Amino acid sequence: ESQRMFSDMLVMASLSLQFGAVQCAMLLFGRALSLANPFATRVWFCEYEDVWAVIIGRVFIAGASIFGSLFVFLCSNGHFMGQDYLTKPMADFLHIDLSSLDPDGSGVEGGWVRLDMAFSAVPTVVGFWTDRWNLRGYLVKERALLYA
Image (cartoon, rainbow, N blue to C red):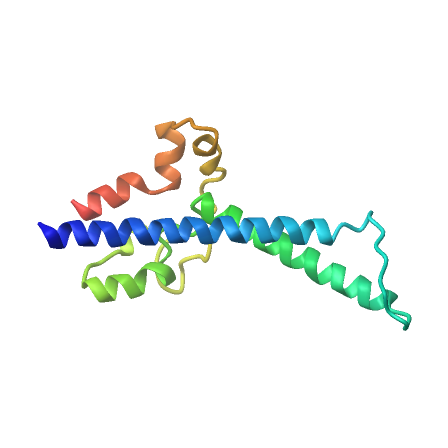
């Protein structure tokens, strides 16, 4: 009984830490986007001509912000859910077959990103759950059948 409570406590603590880390990352991406605003003028205190340094810096920050926002969008919408390159280490550790979670096939013929669904997080973010939309995006039925 105490081991189960301890493991539940560890799972909840790790989920809380993960949530906090994602919130910090989103805050940093938001600040980086405000810094990379190409329409705002900034005063740079440098005695050399640094126009290209400013341009390159803004391009890198904007690129990292766009890439990070796209990656978070893809992750939250379940586009990487069940992919074999993510589930294989866990399957090997637990000695179970998780290949049925990969909807586009496992191995070389399988894809990197699920393209059979989109915007799974949108109803959940606004507080609405629809089975037809969310269950397919987060592989709820497939996971339930596998874990049962």
